[in-house]
Image 1 (cartoon, rainbow, N blue to C red):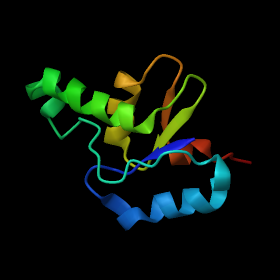
Image 2: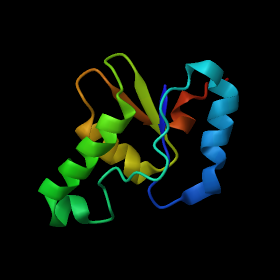
Image 3: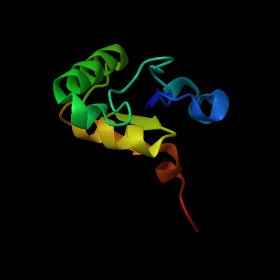
Length: 100
């Protein structure tokens, strides 16, 4: 499991701190301060730049097939899911919580 810190800084890093406690050693790379490329309307206004920014993020995470990248932002989830390398899943961390 890897974690993408929301680009806009929502939550003050509390999501990542919680995930570190829960995942422990299973937590891989954390994208502190890196944008996913969604950038509000950047994906629509400058799709090539948006993909380039996303590619830089994915390179820094080095997520392998079968791994998952979690985030605390719904917009980032959309961008990550649209640009994820083959076999890598993207989701909001809330999606990982089981319900009774």
